[in-house]
Length: 242
Image (cartoon, rainbow, N blue to C red; front, top):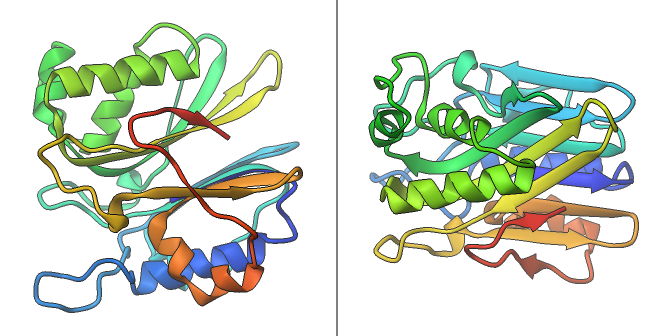
């Protein structure tokens, strides 16, 4: 996952090359048999500037021929389908929803107990939704602004012990009335679950732009070529605004 905001056009090409490279061969993960770990099960993005461009694709992101983003806010996610979860372009992230004033897009890495979340919301486990989509349903029905909604949804999944592994979340919101754009990030795992380097989220930035990204991106030669002066680890258990 990556989430950028500001004037990032000068670095977006190497950032996207880094993203594609680590999705083709994740440097921090391997399959159980030791083979290459690929995020090959579709991808999606949202780019908000003077227009809103929302895309989903079933192809692996590293095969995509036209990836670009204009200054504003941009989020991209490449999927590695969790065991037992549905696959296909309809299940690619980010997911989109809205309330009375805002549009929202959510990307997630990790696994939720979707049956437990569906039961909490008083409905059957949906056949046509992944665990991330069910969490997004939970988010949408919470009161308040984007940060308040996300905070309450995270509290619920923690109270329900419904996080199966990590909970890495990026959220983009757009207010239809004011035009305000915002991005939020969250990373954590239950105390009894592993939380290693491959679970972490990082940030870089300056006065012009800021970027959040999954840890694997930072291991790409394309990322290293940009030459950021400092890279920061996003703290666990805290919602951070970009």
